[in-house]
Length: 244
Image 1 (cartoon, rainbow, N blue to C red):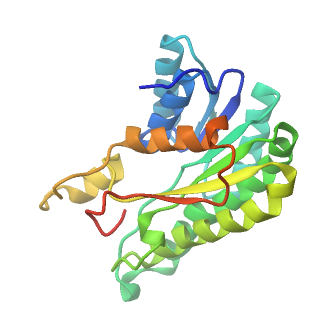
Image 2: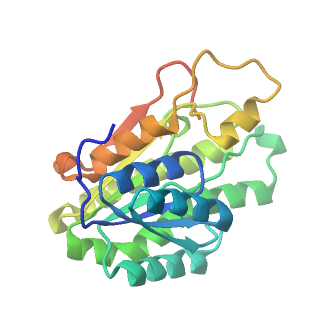
């Protein structure tokens, strides 16, 4: 349940908004008054989420971008700010899951995983930060339980998500004096399309988290209620799985 209109008048950019945690986050923040810009490679999926938000009398626009491309990341932020004339919250959720033993991970797989799961957050946040300084806004990054502890056959994914944690902590310190908060979430196994696809045909775990549960935590961190929280690395893994 929403806890009020904590984001009334706030411009919020959500990457990876077409499905999974990104979709749940966009819907949750819109339900609390946020004016959403949904950024994703999947134009049709993002458009569907935007339609759901508008059907609930919310405000939503779509910007298509490729998280694997530096220029696309920067241009996406410019377009989002142009649509809203400001930026209060950046939710860096776009990412991919990569699995494979060390000797099986190709150079291309390694580089693409790092580009999408780590470098894209750097490019997007770098472009967005001047706008967030103006609004005393905040950033919520999507890390992973896999970035906190070792997970076999996830070397690229775990490395990228550990990098997100380091980036979050560094930026939280760097921008504290400029009143911009930076936090990260570390979900475990969540019932998102990539996780459900990976589990197809194998024994299912006893429980997966729901995207809406992660969105609720994002809503807290991004709101004024979380105004004294920065540099936090929040675990949401149920202590049941080794990590997403």
